[in-house]
Image (cartoon, rainbow, N blue to C red; front, side, top):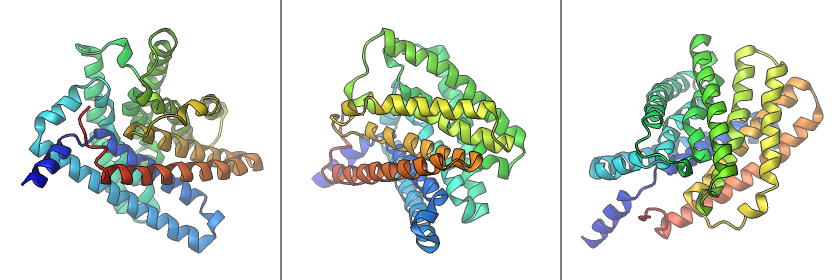
Length: 324
C-alpha cells in the first residue's frame, strides 16, 4: 500500500516538460537520417530505424504517464496549465507528433500522415489557447517571459517540414506565417526581459538554447515551401548561426548547471541547427557546411545520449517526479 501511495504521489508531479525528451530524440533521428551515410548505408539505415521506434516508444510512454496523471490528478494538470511558464510546454506533446510525422515519412507514409495530422490538429488549438491566455494575462508578469514561450509557436513553423507532402501548401503557409509572426513578437519581448529585467532562474538557463530553434526550423520549412534557397532563406539560416555562436560563448556557464528536465532544452535546438546546416550544405554545395553539420551531429548525439542516460538515472532515483 505504501508503495502504491508513493507511486501515486510521484505521478502527481510527473512534469509536462518530459515531452521535450521526444522532441530531442526526434531531432536526433531526423539528423541521423540526413547524415546516415557517415555510418555506411546499411548501418546508418539500421540506426535510423532503431532511433525512430525508440522515439515513438518514449513518446507513447510519456503520453501514457501524463494521461494517467490527468485522470488521477486533474487538479495537478490544471495547476500545470495555470502556471505561467509550464503552460508553454503543453504544445511539446503536439510538436513531438509533428516531428514523428517527419521521422516516419520515409518508413510509412500513412503513419506519417496520421502523426502529422494529429499533431497539427492539437498544435492549432493548444497554440490558440496559449496565445489567448497571454492576451488575457491575469497571471503574467515580465519575469514569467522566458525562451520557453517560443515552444508554442515553434510548433507552427514545423508544420510545413512534412506538411507540404501531406496537404495543400496553403495549410503549411498558414502555420508558417503564424509561427514567424509570433517568433518576431516573442523575440522582442524576451530580449527586453533579459536585457532590462531580472536574470533567468538558474534552472531555466538551458531554455536560452530555444533561441536557436525558430530560425533553424524556419529555414528548413521555408526551403520546403519555396523549393529553393533565396535571400530570405539565407537570412533565416544566418540568424540561427548567430544564435548558435552567441550560445556557445555562454556554454561555460551552462556546464555548471545542475541537471533538471529543463536541460532537455539543449537537445532539439541543436538537432534543428544540425539539420539546417546539412540542408544549407546541400543547397549551396559548399563542403564547409557539410563538415560543420557532421561536427554538429556528433555534438548533438553526445548531448542527447548524455541527457537520456541522466534522465534514466534521475527516474530510477525518483529525482524528477517531485514537488517544487
